[in-house]
Image (cartoon, rainbow, N blue to C red; front, top):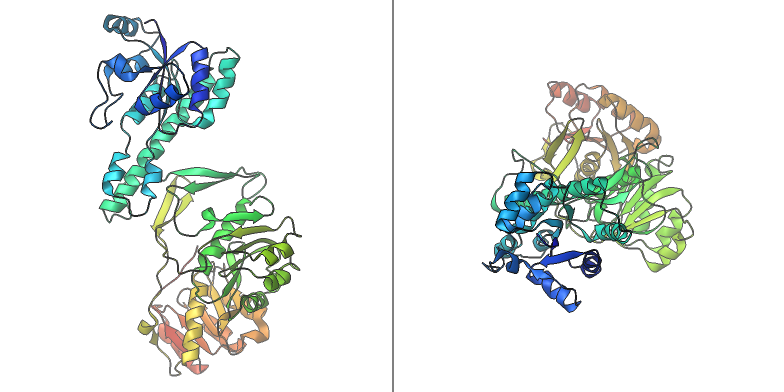
Length: 516
């Protein structure tokens, strides 16, 4: 056991030559495999190939390189265990004190368009995770390195002629297990999606990578961070936005931005969605983006203060000029015209988020996952919209074609408002919104009192059935002419009677839209 070995087997070669030089300067013999060997040879860094030590060449198209007792015994041997050391000496096995290893690019491979299953399988690393896990298990004696981001601190320690501390080794071991756990989770998740239709499996592992450190969480006394789930989705969403200007996004900004983005995906025409505290306070579609903003803002002229605004068309200078007179936290759009950027750059704290693809039809899929203390809730995302042809008119008065158009818009709105929720709509713009209440009649009362005269002649949508006729009576007194709701209450007859008494057209969709 004459050499101090450092085993290097990396797919990502970033920084490996500088790190290898420092290891060599510190007295380590570099032990490496084919791909890394070529890089070190070009940099004129001395090394020994793994095959020289094991006596076996790389085989099976590179599937077997480091899976050998000479390698794993050199890593796993406990230096404070005499019997382990005697065994190594008996078999002429050298100690391996450093393992530098990162894995085949499985994550990048599965993101390629139309990738073949052969390519996917060949990018499942076997030897690498084995090396990493072995080194991490023996962290007291072996330094395990899994990312180029870790090199600088280790180089600093080596240059200072200090040993790698126990605390450093422990942190590196934790990172190593996290690295292999994430790798295996991605493999299981991808193959499950490709080979099965199991949407909610018995065992489900979520893996994510930190995208942003935050000053604090929901409140200043809470720490917070934003993680992007892996593999990154191809769907336009809050985690794929590009920030063009403004302060760093806060925890609450991200929650609100997500609500705005998911709501605006419901609409095809030029649309504006205004969000405050994770629920819409104004939604409108119009022939122009400027009109959509004006109509959405008119729903509630107080709540947009400090809010989030999303558009599904390029933000133009005329809209930017209108927005510049308001205090807003975030503006989201698929793109920003250069003249709009010029107008808004004066508001240095205003965050602009560009989200390409938001102006196109978006295929929405995947799971909605929420945390509770001690567990997770998972469900399919609520992308379902009942075909209006299946709606049922239950009152004497029938809705007109224009009424039905407003009803469809109203339902798309109300499904994104916190329950219990109601939305009052004229044409394709909200005129009042009531949500987040413990009773439907209270949500209705709040909306009608905020909407006042604007309620007259409007269509009302409810996210769930009316348990009593009281909310219908409140809406009727405010001037509602049409109501759309799921139906299904034990008092549906009572509710329908109330609608008939007020000459209101009522339609049942059969589809509830709770949003807790």
